[in-house]
Image (cartoon, rainbow, N blue to C red):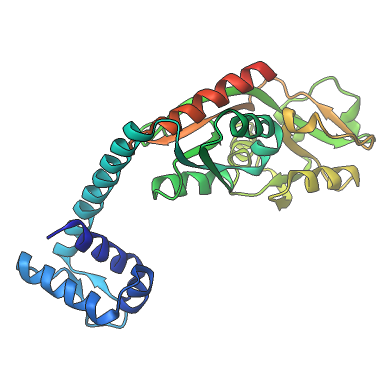
Length: 296
């Protein structure tokens, strides 16, 4: 049994099909089938149930799959650490970044990082925070940037900055005359929120429920600027992080603080506790924290 066979086995399980797995692995389907039969013969167990069109794991196969993934992850971490020591400020890092965060604080981070570390390739994948967590857990990205709180039993969290989320209303809205509002004041409002892939969506819903009511969500979007435009047309109210609104110039909207400040906007890095943190990952984390601190 070798690493190649483990990779083949894991790909078959994920695709649930020999043909699709073989295509992804760039080998022939008969060769892949033969490799799996040889592996099962060597281990003297049946790992795969081939009785249906969709490949399934046997009971022993499920146990083997968990261990195989752990071994493969450990092998990849070992390779990364060896490469890391030999290359230092060379390599690449893949970062999952929600658009609502990227547009507000990461423009300067990305441009200055490229200038300071031209030999490090930076790949940005834009997704909502929920998808960032999913991609990090599955090894599709190296780092995630999310809004706290997070599950710190599963992930390591490194704070970047803290601000607050605020209420955005039409300038003729009755609440526009107030210096501040509470969550309870919004019980009768129609909400325009970022969709469920964003942590802020879940935070707003939770705080409304804590205040004794279920928010009336009229519309959801992945585009914060679209929500602002809807508010400007007096279609409802929204809650957004204050930093992203600093660049908005629209006289039809009014921004109001929420008190008590229950909707803090805490942004930080998310790391998989099972993953090796490479030198280039540390470089990007340190650069980001320093750059954001100088902008505050």
